[in-house]
Amino acid sequence: MADEIKIPMAESGIDAGAEDPSLAVVERTAAEAAERAGTDEQVMTINMGPHHPATHGVLRLVVSLEGERVLDVRPIVGYVHTGIEKSCEDKSYWKVIPFVERMDYLSYFFQMEAFCGCVERLLELEVPDRARYLRVIHMELNRIHSHLVWLGTTALDLGAISMFWYCFRERDRILDLFEMSTGQRMHTRYFQVGGVFEDIPAGFAGKVRDFCEEMPERVDQYEALLDRNEIFLHRTKGVGIVPRERVLELGVTGPLLRAAGEPWDLRKVSDYLPYGDFDFQIPVGTVGDGYDRYRVRLQEIRESVRIIAQAIDGLPEGPFIADDRKVVLPPRDELGTSMEALIHHFKLVTEGFRVPPSELYNPIESPRGELGCFVVADGSAKPARVHFRDPSFVNLQLLPEMCRGGLIADLIQNLGMLDPILGGIDR
Amino acid sequence: MPDAPGLELIAQEINAAHDGTVIETAHERGTATLIVDSERVLEALRWLRDTPEHEYRFLASVHAADYLPGEPRFGVHYELLNMPRVERVSVKALLADPASPSPATSSASPAGVSGGGSNGVGTLVLPEIDSCVELFPTADYQEREAYDFFGIRFRGHPDLRRILMPEDYVGWPLRRDFPIGGEPVLFTHNEAETPHWYE
View (tube, each protein chain N blue to C red):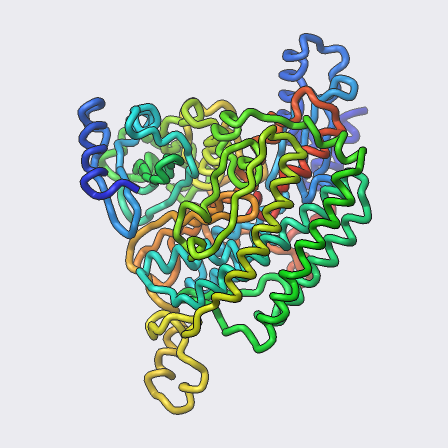
């Protein structure tokens, strides 16, 4: 009987005997969890995802359960892998920017800065002060936007539906600001190698100031909604604690590390952008539970608002992009009058600029932690390798440690507080 | 980042403890790099992590690169960080491709095993390096990623499987000789070329 069924399958070119290759992982997770629990009777292994509203993307979790209790979690990723790193090797440097933006789709300005900063360091190109300030303004707006999406979706997972609307209302104001200055709401391609694409339009500074005035009040409102919400407090306090030493060992960075009590922020210790000019603080947690992670991110929104307000007030005059005709496109108005400008424009658009043979790892602080861009230049106009050390990818290793021994409802909370972006993990 | 003499001192001290570990140092564009013997990379990493005055205890990133047509072909990079002093040092190990027909390594590659040359399809002889998961647990996913994309086998890795590509995928997609756009995309006009696609 079994043979009769197999024959038409074989004709169709599908090997009926072939198993789902990930089945081995499921079986191993179950076996190890059973061993840890000392029983093999009651352990149940289930798949969460890949398509599940609470996984914040296409993440599949193989979860071993003993009743409601989580024995082990094994994340399986790669469902939205699109080979961006490979594609970048076939594009000239300035065409790589829109590709890398689309990795972590909530922090596109950070991907651009990691890549452009890396290429600028390889070229030893000076970026004008105004451009550096404009980058800070857009990146901090982006950080708020990313944290707002996190807050909205995580609160939604925990049952606080109205948070989602409030957070997305403020997020929309940030996207309006991006649209005003860059022409796009997401994936703006605003940062260029050498500076930014365009100066900010008239009226932008005023709108940013309005936003900075209003935003702290909004954060107070979010707090008022969540901080006295008994369900929220019960579900976050004391849940998902991992000791600071273990968090460091696992290479976790960003708000997760700071919530665990380690005051580490690349904005304070590294000089990739003029963060030293601004007065801001690094929020640090004490317990390292879900509630601390929430508090740290909320406070980071406030600190980012302070940075933006100082940057827009102290915005220096001057050029917004470096004056290096071998790298940067000449101003549009020169093309009609200057032959050299036309030649440079043509060479840059058709071939692109060349980068001397070298390699560099350039880390910056993204909303999720250390975002590193590693570029290998081989002397041609295309990079030989573009690699992103995505913080979500590394931080995901913390999830099993957060969830073991907890309830399955806590797993949802832990995953939300982890804030993984699957576009960044899978690239 | 240690300055150029400091880097040189680190290299000398490592070599004094484990002879022949550091092959070369490079100090340029604000980065300090130790190029180490790929067989002894763990000794260098352990020394950098545990020696009291250095203590690069945080591994920020592990990534690989394919330097084709350069020799040796593969590089594995470790970006170490000392958080209290905010110093970074990168360690780079170069690996030859055992599947390439170069005379120095041909004895390590039994005939007929390497399938269709070194283009990554069907290659069974893989470059190998020691896994540093024991020293730095964070390297787990990143070494799997390097294995997935470059076919670099990390000896002693607890769970060396593909991570981003499907588990039954054949080939090492980020190698430089792996073609871009290797997966045919199904359109109406080429439907006939892939019969039974709908099953």
